[in-house]
Image 1 (cartoon, rainbow, N blue to C red):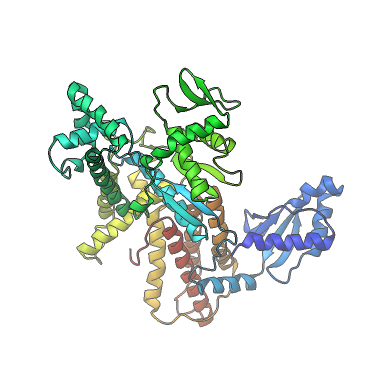
Image 2: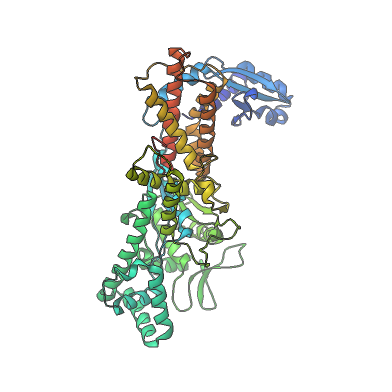
Length: 565
């Protein structure tokens, strides 16, 4: 249900009827119920064009408005605002339709795009740490949201698996004389041990450098060891993805090695179209207005991240035929992507009709406003953070007497993982945020636990009623009107969140919806004996639609609900 689209169409029809040959501005949500449900301020913008007073234009629009369908009332306010009230009968009818549809009457786009979402990007030489959390869950949410709205989404996990460090790592894997399954359980330590050997033993260092050349030339023995290392490393990542309920599989991996053969072609094509210039022996692209060039090949013949990214962009645009390519990567890489995107467009690697975007995000901070670290200053392993989330969630609910130990364990996982994900997704992704266990595991405020509690509370109503819910939704008072209207705004929120790649718009909506329902629940009795049957059924139906909306919203964020809490 695209509410604003439908209301804008009513305004557009009024413009046509009034003889106003201009494209109307979009309506906005009213800030207070006294101002209506929506506001239109286009009359003021038209004042100079039409040489008329804004209130005169607003009056002309109102006289031409159809108030027999979606709208039931319109008033001029201030210098020329038009306050719009929606028809309660129409709202109730649309809520009834949404309740009977498994997608809650949320349509799919009529013009679907093929979208590539590049996210997570773990380093194969180390275990995933908290720095990978935001990319992983923001990217997965964006991919799920776009898929739900009808786009064809291709998930891509761009991992670093090709470079000089891998000669060192596979040389050490061969040296320890085992399959690596034990030593690679702690990738951080494995890397440190390998680096230690590399730094102190010249013969080992020479062997490592030799292995780099052998890997790149296709030596079967070295490639076998390299593949074993990659497989075990990816196994660690997949353990994280399973804990987070993230939809990344081995098939989604497109590693640096995947593009290795294309790197010389990228440089050759840039040279052939006159884009490349030599600088201190390196092959560079100088972009107008940028002092620092994009280096695509070093003087020694080596390639850089920009070269691989250009090869990936060309593959995604030409081979995968994507029309939107989203890179969910740390905001500190903004300059890199801005340059790479420009080179890709100006060189013709990517067509002008392809939308390239860097979905940047801020840093996870501790309570002191510093980057999140262990007590000794080390990097926090992501798996340790997630395990701690489950432990702390268990402490939060351990006094629940209605659950067995196994139920408590299952519930703790849902609540703990959901809390970590929701806390991240609930803020503007471009902002840094403070990681706070107490806040994210609170039953109050904009938290996953608050949302799960609201859902569970609605389920408790149904358990108490325990009978068939039938009848029609009836909008009886202002609070019911606001709740029903909020439910119908869900698709507008999802569409905007997908367009802006901003999951926090979904969490803000869910929090507002849950808060409004709690107020409705307290002020509009549902199961009390003095409530007539028609009203009881209507309120049960509104409660059911609220629960389904919360569940769908959380599902798009990769978070589960619970029936009891």
